[in-house]
Image 1 (cartoon, rainbow, N blue to C red):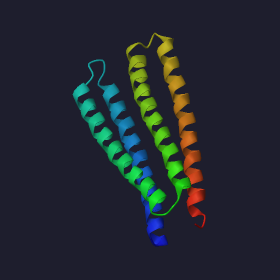
Image 2: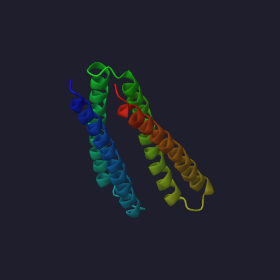
Image 3: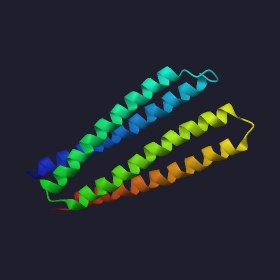
Image 4: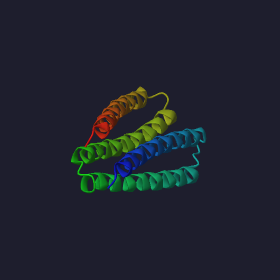
Length: 150
C-alpha cells in the first residue's frame, strides 16, 4: 500500500482518539446534569446517555482495532499495533474508572456528611490522572514511531 494510505490510517486513528475525548466530555456533562436531578434522580435519561456513550465507545474501539490490524498486516508495523493494544487497555481502564467516579460522586452527594465518600472521589480522580498520563505517553510513543520512516 502507498505511504499516503499509511498517513491516512494514522490520521484516522487520531480522529478516533479525538472522538473518544469528546465522548468522555459528553459523558461527564451528562453525569453532571444527572447529579443535578438529585435526590430524585432522573435515571431514565442517564441510562439513555450511558447507552449512547457505550455505543460510541464500541464503534470507536472497533475501528481502532481495524486500524491496528491494518498497521500490523498491511504495513508490517507491529510496533504501532502494540501501542494501540496498550492504548486500548488503558482506555478500558479509564472507562471503568470514569464509571466508578460517577458512582462515587453520587454517593458523596447523597451523603455529604460522610468524608469517606469524598475521599473515594479524590482517590479515583488521582487514578484517572495517572491513567491519562499513561495514555498520553502511549500516544506520544505512537506519534514518534509513526513518523519514523518505514
